[in-house]
Length: 239
Image (cartoon, rainbow, N blue to C red; front, side, top):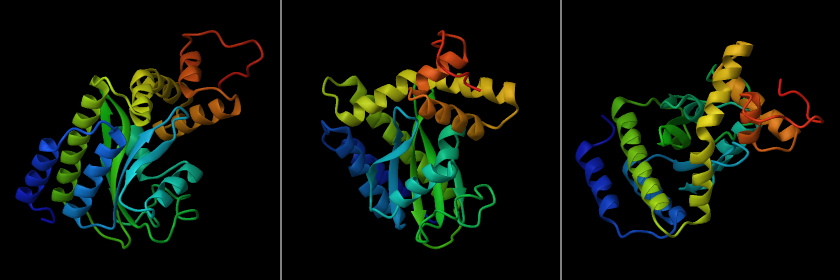
């Protein structure tokens, strides 16, 4: 077992007893620092979705992991994207050679190899991911994934408390947007999967591309796909 359960619980307890941070970004950075110390990996990051449905880091232990964010955005595939869209933990011994993401290796920084991620949920749906990575290929055991899930649950508690407070930071506003519109976007993804016979990632990327091409919010296009709003006459059909 890679992660000591007593050390894990002690780390979680310290974070729960820490003084309240008025800024969500600083609170999440504190979690990242604790995770980095416990896991002993090369990097840790927390990513939240924005209005363009792009995952972006709001807290990270270093700059290397940001290369993974950029690469996944370019390739429109990768472990963090899968963890978010499919709302389930995922891991890879080596993302550069993983057949699940064939386009990723061409744009990925050589320093990012083994990756594990878990979705962050609010209101029953994912709003981001928490990820750990290594600079060398390596396996992930049950203790790694259990610890990652435990930290994901703690992060969800912190985000929920921030949204319930009276002082909202920019990061909290981003989170509120994701919470408000995630359900309709998920429904649109399900509709496209059923009507076009594609998987969740493909449907998600099609929705984002059409929104970019028409300079609209993904949430607005999702409502249109579901027939909940009437598209302007000049707008092209979603698919």
